[in-house]
Image (cartoon, rainbow, N blue to C red; front, side, top):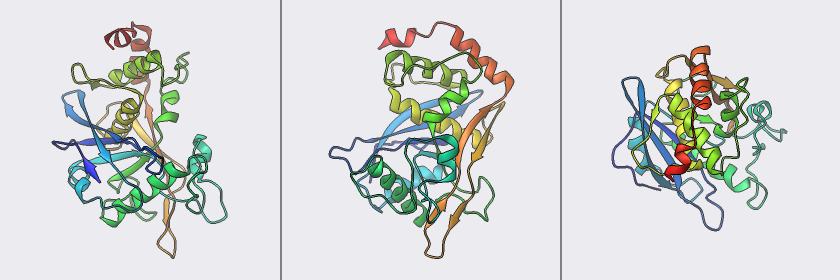
Length: 263
């Protein structure tokens, strides 16, 4: 594995990709550092070839961060199950079965890539917390930004446009800025980076760094079976309080197309 990171960050968010497709794209990583009441965002990439690849080159980043949130499954379902409890509860489109799926099936390459990468990190001693650990004992957590965006605007009368549209990206950027994120001047921030940034915000909230917000563990605790296989485990979602929700609502009521015009 390779990284383009030049200096570590306090909180990391990672938008995983399918390492088994014909032309895998680099993995977008967002790093956040607290500066007073704001979270300064930077972006870089990882390259991953699939399987239990050597993650030594990434360990300094993950170990330097308080917490790292990856957008992808970290464990398989219980034997006999076609999906994990967290995926059912959050209606995640990609389902993780009890055995690694064969490449070629829908979401199979992405699921394999994510489970194998989490396993490689766990083997290096920086994996998620097992069932007997504290809720946030692990350095790595699983998130699902695609399902968390709608939670952040729930009850606000806002229906977010598709993430691959300019307006959809502009609205998501407004939400992140309302949460305290500050982007680098002139930085191009497409939907993959926006998902990585929300993942990093969830990592910050899980570390207690986001005022009026908390993370909820959806699903069941991570289990390790008699063969050493990781199963189930939670997806962490961001839950905001009334004050922060009003901040988001106020930001969304203001002009947001400025980000569309800048691009």
